[in-house]
Length: 343
Image 1: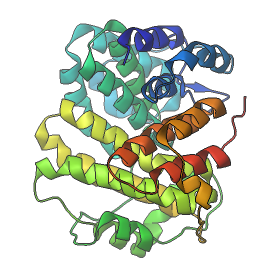
Image 2: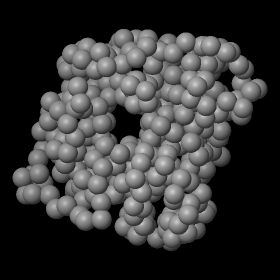
Image 3: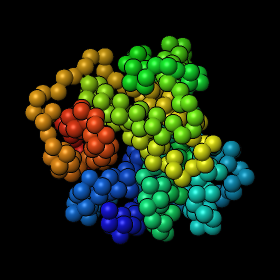
């Protein structure tokens, strides 16, 4: 990948805030990264030109606070500008891996924050930093962590993993919550259902920390498979049942191993919560033409679609296809079919 293109994208988007339109997440940095990685770097400049017109400016710091006060302001979106400023100072003053290791156990219990976009944006930034450390990438990590902290939302109450049910089978047995409203409302109802927490706990537990990466990849692949069947329940939201665990997998190499098991615990519960909150009760069967698409065709169709969720999901689907997930390309095509850009 051309690192200069990604850094240029980060720089062009650096003045924009993590939210726009009141509460919508700015997907610009994440989708720009994904667009490059699916082989459509040539579309990057025009995509940012168009997408950036929707975005708001980065909020300014209003009431400075220091890290010692983090618990008081965690999950307070009214302090978004203050959180961004705090992390901007921190990524400039210490090694980014040290910063990440200190904040990760504070933030990962809030993995659902802003429909998982704090986690996902962090995953993209960490992957980029592991490839090459530059100022735009450090600053992007700071923006991701600040956004996550301001919108922090606790994972619904769940029991510790005890196995032995495979993750895909556990997904199939998750109860469907028939609740109206946004993700915060829907997730608040999940702890009322003991069947949900028992099903989440029934998933296979890794034997040791070294098994966590494989588990997160399995969760990602199983969510991609099921998007093909369930995506019509809520095409945009169910994308995150796959992109969130995949983002966590991107972060693991930068974290101390002792933080890996807790990462799996919270991220699996988050993916399960999204599935229960948004999946459709009926399944969709892909037509034959979707099942015969090539990776290049799916990538090109995603770039032509231009929706940020589609671009990000197709990158994950292409990775799943490389790992042998037979339904992955059809799942990507299904997202392209279901999601139209609103700009």
